[in-house]
Structure formats: C-alpha cells, structure tokens
Amino acid sequence: MEAIIKAESRIASDSVEMEHDKAIRHVMDAIQRVNEAILCAVDAGISVELVRDSRYHDGCGNWGDQMAPDIRRPDADQESSCHTDPEFQVCS
Image 1: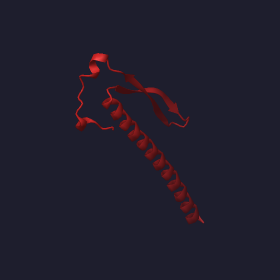
Image 2: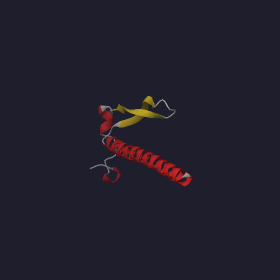
Image 3: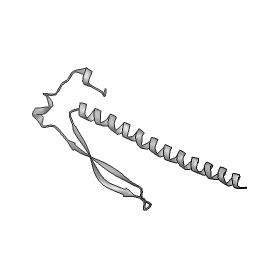
Image 4: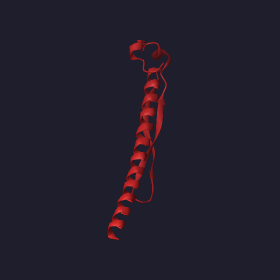
C-alpha cells in the first residue's frame, strides 16, 4: 500500500512539474515574441523601454512582474538620419 501512495505522489509531483514547465515555456515564448516586436519597432525608428507596471501576487508567495512599454517616437529631424542598410533590418 505504501508503494502505491508513493507512486501516486510521484505522479502528482510530475504533473505539477509538467504544469510548471508548460507555464515557463509559455512565458519564454511570449517574451521571444515581445523581443521580436521590439526589434521591429526599433528598426522602424521607435525607441521602446519595458517598465514594470505592476506586480501580481497569488497569495501563496509567488509573484510576477507585469510590464508596460514606454514608447518614444523620434523627432522629425532624427528620422532621416538613421541607417537604412537592409542588413540591419530585422523586419520586412
């Protein structure tokens, strides 16, 4: 009987670990998409800074920062002075 309880506990632990791995992958994928969008914005002549907008707490000791973009558009005289070399362009 004790072996069955240990096996069930290990399965539950593996299930939680799989959920954690899935959540981590989801965050990493979303960050990759944000980074790609930032590259495109910068290539378009826009400056982007991510700043912490808030911090989410689940009440169990876990927390996560929620981000918001601080966007800075270039001045009219700056736009034409940037590089236009296609080699530097990430987005099409």
